[in-house]
Structure formats: C-alpha cells, structure tokens
Length: 352
Image (cartoon, rainbow, N blue to C red; front, side, top):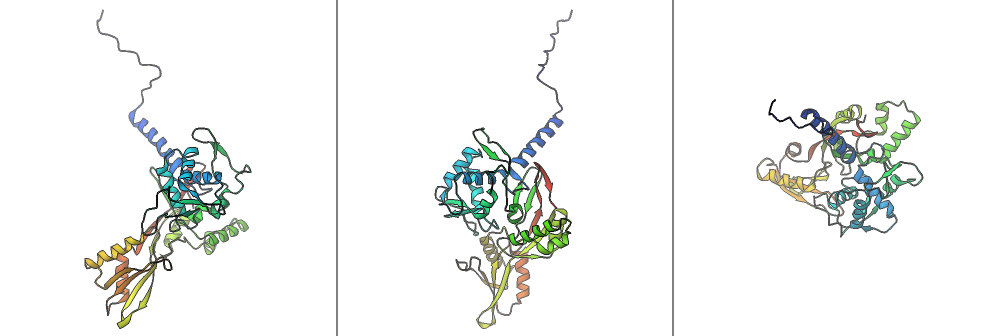
C-alpha cells in the first residue's frame, strides 16, 4: 500500500481555462465596455454617455436658454450624484467643452464666466462658473417626457435616465465628435447646420440621392475656428469610405506697410490648434533662422478681432516664398484625420 498522499480534489466551481483564451475574452469585454459606455458617440444623438447625462441633469434643473444660469458645481454634483458616478474631474471638463465656441460648432451649453480660451487658458474652477443650456440643447431634449425614447435605471437604481435623447437637432453631423476607445477611435468633423438641413431635405425628398448630388448641398466640414480646407480628395474619401485626411490652413490676408514692406495677417486658424502655439512656433523659427524673411511677430487679437496674428516681412522678400515656409515650419498648416465611427445598436460602425 502506497504512503503517497492523494492530490486534493478541485472544487466544482473552479474551471481550468487556457490563459490566452481568458485574456482575449476579458480584454474584448473591457474594450466593448469602454467603447459603449465612454468613448464613442451614439449615432442617433451624437453624444457620449457623460455628455448626455450632463444635459439630462441640466434639464432636470430646468436650465433652459431663458432661465437663470446655475453654478457649474451644482450641475456637476447633480450629474455625478444621479447619473454619472465617475467624479467631478470627469464631468466638469466635459461640461466646459460643450460650452466652448472654438471647440463646438454650435455649443450645447451657454457658459457664464471663464470657460477657457482659444489661447489655451484653462477654465476657472466650477465653483466660479455658471451655465445653462442653449437652444440647440433644448431641441435635443424636446418631447423627452412624451415616451419618445427608452429609459433605463441609473447606476444605483434610484431614478431612470434616457438611453438616447430625442435629438431633433442633428448634433452628430453639426458638432462632430472625438473619442479614443480601446483598439479604435472616432474623429467626426463639424458641419454647417444650414447645409446639413438642406442635405436632409434633399434626402427626404429623394431617398435614392447620390453622394455627388448630396455634396452639392453639403460640400464639406465647417470648422468653428474657420480656416481653409485644401483640396477635396480627403472630403471624398471621408464621405465614401468613412476615413480621410484633410489638409487645413490658416486664412490670411496681406497689408501694405510704409516703405513697400508687407505684413501677413492671420484671421482664422486650423481647427484644434491653440493660437499661442502658432505665435510661439513663429518666434522660435525666426530665432533659429528657419524664417529669415520675417522681421517681427505680434499677437494683436482683441474683442473686435478675436484672431489677428501679424507677421511682418523684411523689405524685398517674396510673399509667396514666405508663405510656403510658414506653412512648412509652423502649425499654420496641419492635417485633420476623419474617422466616421459611431455606435449603431451598441455596436461601433463606420458611417458612410
């Protein structure tokens, strides 16, 4: 008879699984959780869950475009307490972005106080700022109390929240969206509301309309900071394949100075570029000799001219040569990748 002890029996509730398969399955579950609950917008209202919950909390507080502004601390507190239990550090920056006209083509929140600037200045703390919804946001909410959308229990089942907003306002197309998920990202550009409405009317009247016919009404994106889109290939690629790359340039004009000299004035800058970044890069390039044609750089922006960056050229310098160097060495020219991915039935889909 052997004296070797028997191996202990494995409990019935423990399963032996290959590590690789378990890691793959767990990672996919995590990725889908991030995609659905945080990073990608719903194709129906163009909002991520955090954005939608902020607007729902503001609607609960009856903060319409004609109401008084309320403290952002109150709005953030109600959002985190009732709908989005991830803390003010997540909610307030989202609220701020929804109120910034240089980020949103049509802001959904009307902010009062310091909500940051295109120069890259940070917003004031939420205890100092106030907000209310804009008309566009109230259009997103219209008829929400008339059983137009489904509601689900909130995180602690003390109340309910809408799965999606009724969204009479075409938010996804006119404001776009940006988000980085696990294994994918979205970068949908903003568009002009009037052009989108014209395109929708054409589509309703003729559901079989072709893309070239639709692009006669919606020729391309319309960025809140203005600027120029160089060429149409990137737009065509984005609308036909769901992905494309735009080349954006600052919009400029020339002014004559005494002595026959010329200065280049920047009136509009590429979307997503901080204005101070352009000024700092210009000064750096002048100092290190990459822009020998430039004699002076100034930021003359004010309330009357929100964007006015002045670049004075030396006497006898070719303006075309100087412009080419400015585009090459500074953020006056940049690229904007378009990735039209949104959630359709809780599944990420490339929109074409």
